[in-house]
Image 1: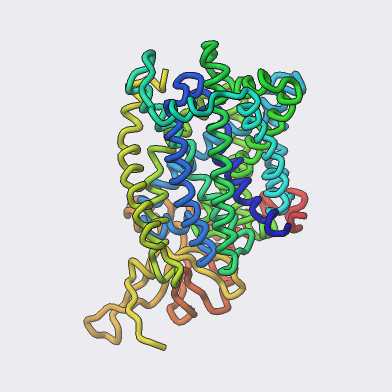
Image 2: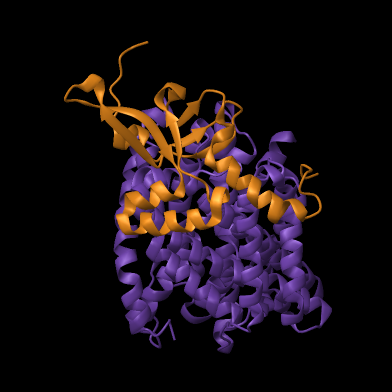
Length: 409
Length: 129
């Protein structure tokens, strides 16, 4: 039982990271627009995040050095700073979207405009970071997030022709009403949502927060292999649900609340209640992850004390960065920006910044100074290298595609 | 101990500095080199740490700006810390320092932030529970 509870870091990272507001929206949106023609991207994305999260978790466990230490160490001060600025900005956009997401989930229950709930949601996020111990936080939101399994139940309840679904997913093509550019743009959005850098910032820092040691390397692997595939199954369920329910009715997803429509259709009120709990947990979990990651990245780049395992007065600069990030994100959210648009830009932009984070992880995972005899095996290196090439190609293609498609319109 | 070759850029620069009590006290932002024993070779005599030195490494102009800002902030801005090589206990995935780290710039800046912001928020002196 103890072991079963210990994979909650992986589950929280996956539910709050893999299935955050970005994936909730991106998967539902692509399901409604492209059917299952982009399902393969989720599979490619989950393999990538599994390989690199395992590496990052292993490095952090063996050397106690989380991802942004490695970024600074391997890219040097200037490129490291460029990555810090890019990652911090993307992370800030995501934090804004997640806080708005929490407020939207609450507003659907409270029937108040979500803007009024943003300060309350933001305060709750900060309070949990300030007061709740890391492990309790991770267990609470990891387990609460399991409510999202209802989206899988939704698909099973609708009872689709599974053979037909697999055939569609295995023979992807660009639907007639879309262009190759929008297809590629949404592929990148899905990929960016699956491999968002804050997942590895949070997961590797979490390994240090939880004081994992060499004997916990199995735990690291278990977390990665349970959490992320679960995230992928939920993402695909959202896509399938949208493809089955929304696409035939020409409903496009441009609001977070529409993510729950297939579940309401299949399971009624109980389904709605459960999916709202799931959306709340996923966005809240992601708000915690991005809020903490704001502090993790800056503190690790500059060598400050950081983390929730310390008293706040032992890591004051870290807590100051977290506090200011949440405060500014609250103001940005209150300005009335569309959270779904903010989300879309954040995941697409993160695709452009991915190589700068994943390259140092791959290099250090092979450095015997850090890793002793726990360096990468040959296969992990092969897959890691192939992904790095793909990441670079995507990074180059992202901005032009964003301009050509006018943001996927 | 076996002889080991260290590469300054690879094994020293940008590594995490860890005090003897395990606390994180900054990065190796730059190195101080001097002629060894008046000969022609250069030796590392100290590790340097602090935002001013770091900015200096990215370009002299940035270094100047940061150092001006530091002077304006006084002690709180964090003077560049000079750590004599003799204080280094081990070099690995981080650099471990011998006791006496209280004069480092990192803890001084933390102290300032505590005094002005974080320390005023209820619960700051308690571990999360």
